[in-house]
Image 1: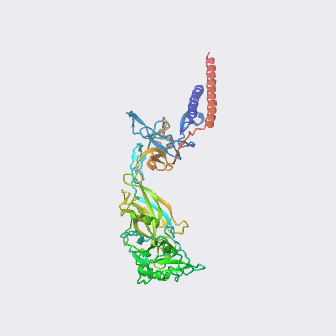
Image 2 (image 1 turned 60 degrees about the vertical axis):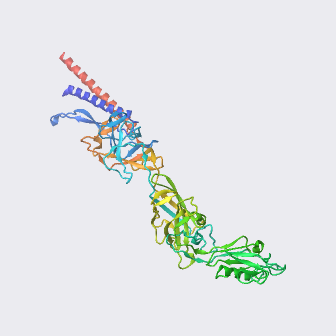
Image 3 (image 1 turned 90 degrees about the horizontal axis):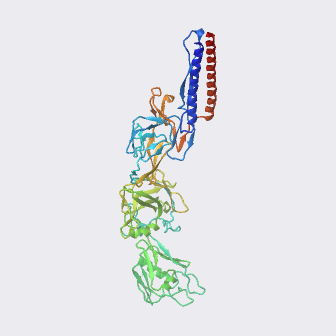
Length: 602
């Protein structure tokens, strides 16, 4: 080949180094382009076919060498829809062929890119800075799973998210083993329990069908009072109801014509000659008076006096109510106004409801159990309040078990016989260890109506140990969880990217729902993809088709940078420049030799 071969080889070398320089130039120019993949240059020697003893170094040609599989640095970004792929894979995208009335008409060709600077346009599409539209698979809002497997161009309208009626309430709480209700008295066993007998006739708040509890005796004690003796000492059963100063008589006398009313029966004070239980002499003793009161009340438990304090008993036949028209003498017995003792137990068979007339009594005998805002089928909010009432206590002895009833408020403005609270009609019983026994995993509020709004039949889930009964010094219900699944209608406000590669919609009602799953494609021949404008790639025979399911992970609010290394490119630039200059020297030398040859001919 000789001189002219060397000349053409050097020209080829110039062409190869120019090609390499162009790639270096492009890499440097795109060093700040999002997800840009640099192009390296491969030099290939071209060897002519000669004998083994006549082999030549040959010419040179160049090829591009892609770095599609080399990841750039991932940096955080302030835009929620920006995303980067950490690991292998490409976003599936499409580009419009034309626009009709401002709406893109796609050409149907899938392309692939690592450029993740996607933002919502006016039509609801996610478009990156190069004009490519993101593809993915829509999420079924009912199941939360992708609806299909084929990616499609994603579009998110500013539609309303339909309201969802409350169907489930998750509830976890601890009930104080001794509830500090308004009526509790630690000195009286069972005073912390709800008393069905104190509710209106025909209404029993306990679970439907609960038999009424047998009546039990109750008592009321007066204040300590002293007599008129000198020195004055505490009244006793022998103290008379009237008497002169210095005698063992009460401090203020009853006189003839005074009365003491026991419920609807009257005891009249006589000067003398009293007969029967409805009359008493003014000179009789406290013991005589107590005997007549007990007789009229019908109690089998005798009233007593201890250290000057009288204790009256209701018995089981009726509640006790005592007044007197001589308030001073009545006060000398230790009572002012009306002395009452309400029997325990009683009432009617369980009706499971609290009416408006009994609202105050119910609040006094129960403890708050939390509240939650629920939603009806139209998305209207409904405040659902709960209360707990203890109905039995193991502290009362054998045959008694710690038992509670749960109520929810039906009508906060109930009056008269209107139902204000509804029992869920389940007895929650607890073991000595404070656990439900048996467990009540869930209950259904069948056809619940709250404040006139129908809630359907929401289920309250307690789980196996969601409600416990442990000691609590505060004596109330400690609600640990009360969460429901309903929500009102809402409009799409913004979208973002989750860590599991899904587009998440943020709605005006506070809901965050998965809208679509981003499609990430991988290729067996990643570096054989065909590069097109805007950092996108097209499939070739050498790259193979797109594969889904084994890609890297998506990082939201982030962008991948260019994988160009400026320092490395500058080094290549120096080498390329030197090689180019060397090739020019070969051309110069070849030219001189040719000139010498021509001079020989002259």
